[in-house]
Amino acid sequence: MTADLFDGLEAAGPAREVLAPGAVLLRGFARPQQAELLAAIDAITAQAPFRRMVTPGGHQMSVAMTNCGPVGWVTDRGGYRYDPIDPQSGQPWPAMPVLFRELAETAAREAGFAGFAPDACLINRYEPGAKMSLHQDRDERDVGAPIVSVSLGLPATFLFGGFKRTDKTQRYRLVHGDVVVWGGPARLAFHGVAALADGEHALLGRQRINLTFRRAR
Ligand code: MD3
Ligand code: FE
Image (cartoon, rainbow, N blue to C red; front, side, top):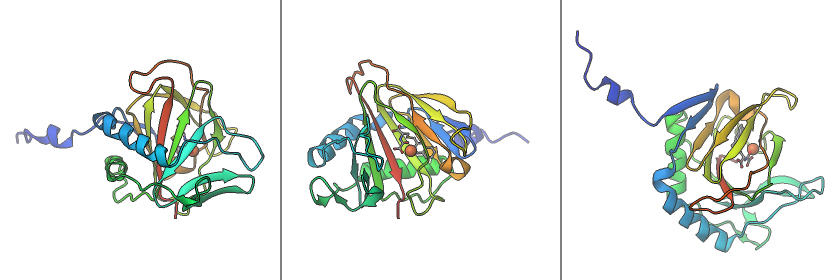
């Protein structure tokens, strides 16, 4: 029997790289939409500006954050939570653009998580020196849903650990346009971002912006 000529094409799709069970890197997946993504981020941050939140322990984070969608992740002296209201404006978070939702849904499907419907998009801004210490994301009700992350701007070193804080970490370089889907056993892994190295990105200048799409409630 001759193989179907189109077998290869049917099987082909975006380049998928499995980092760990449940963690799938789609290199450059968001690049075709970079201009629209950046315009949408500008519109969101005009309504809900980036701000450096305070942890329950009283430390100000080096990463500046905002959100869009039905709920947003916030931290203050009282703890971490998903809140439908931006505490800085007293208004709901800006709506999640259809483009965002579709990008997250498509990426999740490519990674084997069909039907992902995010209700929160946390937008992180790193300037040179900003970092995120090792942590788990466990404020979401349904940890059966994946988290989809989109990296834009300067490259970052992403740290991916195990289920205990002290487990050995692997390092991955994430660059502009990379999308990673974190589901299944990877969903509760410890992870973080090393201090951002200085540089100049053609579209974003001296910063990295990361979108994380979540099913929070
Ligand atoms: C792996 N953000 O916002 S995105 C976060 O680059 C966060 O800004 C980092 O960690 C950033 O909570 C990393 C990649 C990511 C997000 C969530 C995960 C990786 C994950 C949840 C579980 C495992
Ligand atoms: Fe996280």
